[in-house]
Image (cartoon, rainbow, N blue to C red; front, side, top):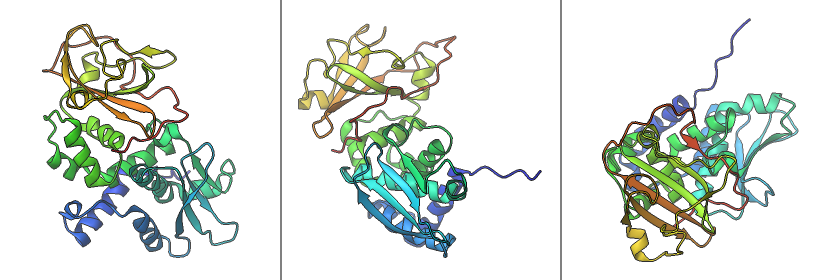
Length: 307
């Protein structure tokens, strides 16, 4: 039996990234983010001339944020659809995610009868990057293509503890949302940090950096309700400039050690982003079996906040 090689999302994203660096220059992000819709059309025509992505269009997609669909006729003609009510940053990542499905999975989607003329992707898999299988691979592809580490690390070295102003500048550089930017930064930072997305005083989901998780600094949001501390900015509905700048919270407010807390409110999506920074390497936490990604509870109306 011939073993079919599994798609390699980071390899494919790196291939396109190298091409873009060669054509546009290594400093291309100084001039603007990836023109992802144009790239989807042009790159698909290059690798699949008889079955490219013909259009990238907005649609009213109930229950999902994006889709990759194909025609009835042969050779297949493809289209990327994204939910119309999305911010520009959210839209860019959705298109990147669906392009990932095209590059990595179009044969599977076309040939597998479980897919009904395409694949439809929900909030959980795209917004929170908490999918599995091909959804996880499409997310990895999109993040690597839109926010390549070789440039991201130059903007924000792994040992730095950024504030919202710095993260907002990077979000603008890559044309993505603040949430997408923080999630990407948490993948490589050497610092201990947690992002918490909340509403009405309760955490919907949270994500820890690797160093934070290893020292027991994470929130359990799976199958449980996590109520924010009363002293938290989001609990007090304090969304002032002082909250965005942040303050040091004492030990035992969030965790047994002090934490520097910043909070940003997105009125558009009716939710808050809280970012916690911890000093030093912290105490080693032993015996935890939970995974570091705690994107657990599905957010019906959650969106990538856009500043």
